[in-house]
Image (cartoon, rainbow, N blue to C red; front, side):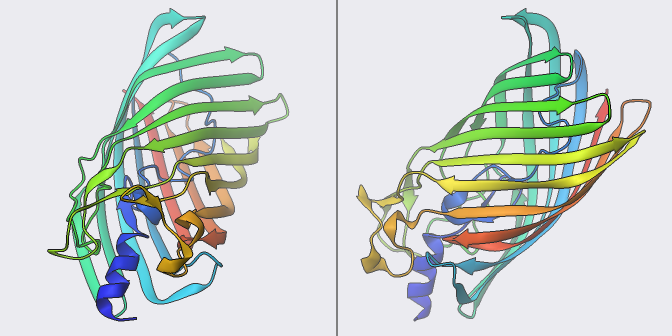
Length: 309
């Protein structure tokens, strides 16, 4: 492949957005970010949550084969403010949150490379409802991802933002029994608007690129031992609709990113949690990606800290 063709392929395949989750089409949610007590929103009050970590991966085509010379490394840190009110709707507490990520990334593609440090795409949810009943906890929400991250049209090696808005309904639950066993999952469906500023290469013609919708879920199964807990966490993502360029689905004529360039990934790995008496929570986890198609695949390392304000 010539460099210009590699850049076109990368432009159709990578967007490091949100917390630098590297994947095709510029996903703005960092898969695997929620694990322990994912469906258990805390009591009314104000909370600060910090997510930080490192991701490294290599590009995979539609057959799951590695694309030579395509690699990403990214450090990320996201600041989240959560407010849970006493006001109830349908018996659930209403709340809202905002997440602002900072990203440092390096992308290599066919001999070319780019490094960028900047603000990523900000997430806001004006509508969070949470319930609790015995061993069960659950929550519904609507996340809105805004294209606040820097987006360089025609230069995906430097772009951190996705270049489009997206809207994501959310449902999460947590089951925690008296013996300390926990099962948590967060289900999401991401619906993206089109990017009307897309260029296949620098100074190229403007085109409209529409990334496909995606179903994805974060999950965890683990055991609590006093203030400590240990288990396995991960995520699964399946793109449900085709990527489109100027209204036409990406086809096999464009190479290994065929069949609408639908992405897929399954990840899993160990997770450890410590909950202090003052309400602070510390989580460390590693997630390894498998079954990867049409996206970067690799390893993600997380540190998460939460505290009441």
